[in-house]
Image 1 (tube, rainbow over the protein chains, first blue to last red):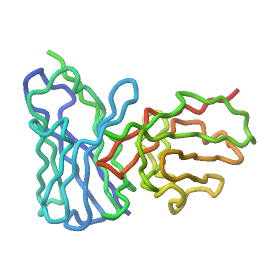
Image 2 (cartoon, helix red, strand yellow):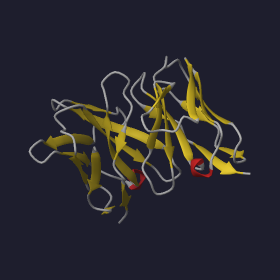
Image 3 (cartoon, each protein chain N blue to C red):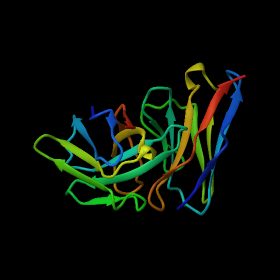
Image 4 (cartoon, rainbow over the protein chains, first blue to last red):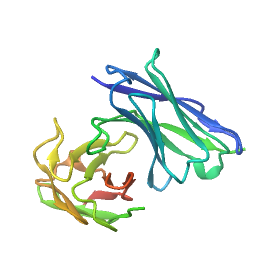
Length: 119
Length: 105
């Protein structure tokens, strides 16, 4: 079965970069599309971006100047980097899989990792 | 952005039928999907493309709608269904509703 697991620092200082890893087992990231989604305190959810099976990316325009999604196919991992973070970036971060490139929903999710931005 | 509006909370009795609504600020055709999220867990896909039941999801869940108005129905409600429910559209990028908290009366 497809499994995703987020990892990374739980605390980041303002103005620094947030870096997270999504490790995928049971499925190759060279197939399908893979996304990052975050859920803020208060439950608002925001799509951040995705990386495709070929390595192409798409980002939420609201984050476009600060976000980068990359991958390491040899480790079957993909990564999120968010620069110049503020307290507004405090959230639970999820990685997830798109099952196809037609309807664009998420069928497998990681358990999430909480990131707090604070000095 | 396409804004999705959900009722914040619904109170239900076990065994009843409940409908959870999601209204889009512009038409999303049938590019609407529903998730269940329990406290401390990741979202779980229930319905994709407005009305398609995800594999392994109980048949008491169903979805309907097109354009701007969508509903998720649970019939009958079981104790395990007490959770938050989110809609998500994929017609124009991807946005989520704020969620509906299903509570017991």
